[in-house]
Image (cartoon, rainbow, N blue to C red; front, side, top):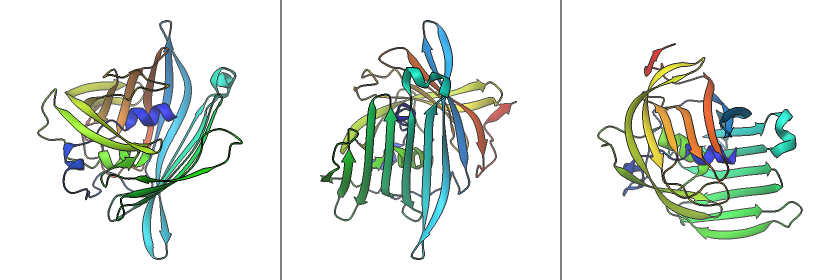
Length: 270
């Protein structure tokens, strides 16, 4: 699950981090849900090892409307004995400003247990965080500086879908900022062009293709090994994400889409 979120954040326009962070939602709507199957590649074989979904709900609080992004990922039970994953991510976003106000995640991956709750204050350029990095350890409160155009890893997916990709040249590198693990990370993505992609049982699509610079850590080596395919239409749905990891490779492939705001005009054939 955490792997897939890291995969999906990597497509964003250079305009996001200009002088203005204002973004209009032109790609998704309440009721959208996209499901993926997670595959693991080792010794020449791709194995379907888990699943994850992303859905858009709404919340009215004191007369104000918010988007509620909800995502859950898990390994299939028959693989739990190898590496059990039960993850849950949530973001609450202001519908008018398209900025996250609160981000929550609960991570249960093998022997790793993480709980985080972020509150974003853009006026003060501050994030208030509450974190538990090991099971049964006490929660730790912190106040961290926040770049005004940074987003949490879940809201970044939806923000990136609303940007103008026209005019990008193959090989162009685009700076991005993401607030993750209690700090802001600077990275970039490289535009690889427009390609056709066929997804089994879903169809063939015209796609925007990117390669993000990965941040080295416990999952990835640093570098540009990841490839992301996004529908070249108004929905901008991530269809396929592939990347090497420290041991083997990971692939996230879409298997179901519903509640989309626009027709899938990028679809070439079934």
